[in-house]
Amino acid sequence: MGTKGFVIYLLAGFSVAILSVFWVHNLKNGDFEPKLYQSSNLLQRPIGSEDKVWPELEFSWRIVLATVIGFLGSACGTVGGVGGGGIFVPMLTLLLGFDTKSAAAISKCMIMGASASSVWYNLRVPHPCREAPILDYDLALLFQPMLMLGITGGVSLSVVFPYWLITVLIIILFMGTSSRSFFKAIEMWKEETILKKSTKEVPVNSHGELVIDTVYEPLVPKEEKTALEIFKFNLNLKRILVLFVVWFVFLLLQVFKNDLVACTPLYWVLNLLQFPVALGVFGYECVKLYKESKKRRLEGNQESVCEADIQWTATNLIFCALCGILGGTVGGLLGSGGGFILGPLLLEIGVIPQVASATATFVMMFSSSLSVVEFYLLKRFPIPYALYLMSVSILAGFWGQCFIRKLITILKRASIIVFILSGVIFASALTMGVIGIEKTIRMIHNHEFMGFLDFCSSQ
Image (cartoon, rainbow, N blue to C red; front, top):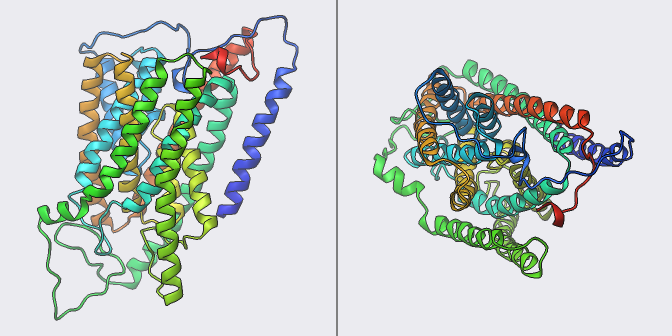
């Protein structure tokens, strides 16, 4: 299934699911009053009691099992560039007994910790193929503003959409992206097999990085960089400052908005102020990529402007904007960092797995940390549990990256990253699907309202 077929699949599935709300709403299941929820996303909606449930942090088989699941989920999630929120929340609610609001907040802490340690590791790693930073700052600046804008939209939609609809949309999306990523991983595996058969030895540098399609001058050996030189080369403080400014502006707007009554004039003004901030940074990056891409095409230069192996035409830029918003919307509905869309998307536009994983994790660090600060100000999670599980995720993010890169070097297969990405998304689809279906059955049994909710009165 090509990109166009995948887009048609998503549009058709989403359209049928949304239109079916009107059919379900008209079913006569008995007389009952609509029940409006006050939660902000799927993972924060009540499953059972709406009261805070914060179990004590004490040694038991539950905390040991949660530590193992959290470690493996963080390691695989950061390697795949998807975070792992779809695994953490079911673990925190079903295994440790947290309420879903607190579980979503702690999940964000775990994603932030794993992402931060993964970024720290990647800053010390050279690009596997060419002389360029392993973090693609052009793509980060392109997607981060739209991702954060989409998160705001996703939170708003989660208030309006019925619970069962969000479950159906997530299953459609996750099954589609996991299948797409899995088939792409198989294609890459076959290509790597052919490459290994055609060459007796694939070059590996002194840092243990697999080097592909690199031209060497045998009489002029390439000078290896020290770890400090690699770190400085990967670190672009100017671009990071821009990303931080966008992050800080969105944080201020969200904090101010939390203290306002929904649907008041000032509430809408603060919502609308996010658009010029996001569109300004996105537009600047779009113009830069478009002009540079056009200039190279006219000169006959086939080298890509950034890591993405596509021509930066107006159509492709609009497509990336929509995908960024979609990724953020999913993050807002789920309470995740949006990596479930960004990771597969970067692979789709031709970014190699190592750079796709590093860049997606880098962007996800900003989106998850935004929610963590907001949740902290709202006192949504217990500090001891959050610090413990975040420490587990920090270790997992670092050693997960280290282990997978060594494995890639030994097996000479970067497709491992794509297989892991596909597996994490599929596991998230299963866990979220089971929880969502169980809650939906309970809502039907209790004759709860199954249609669209009113936004203003649901806040």
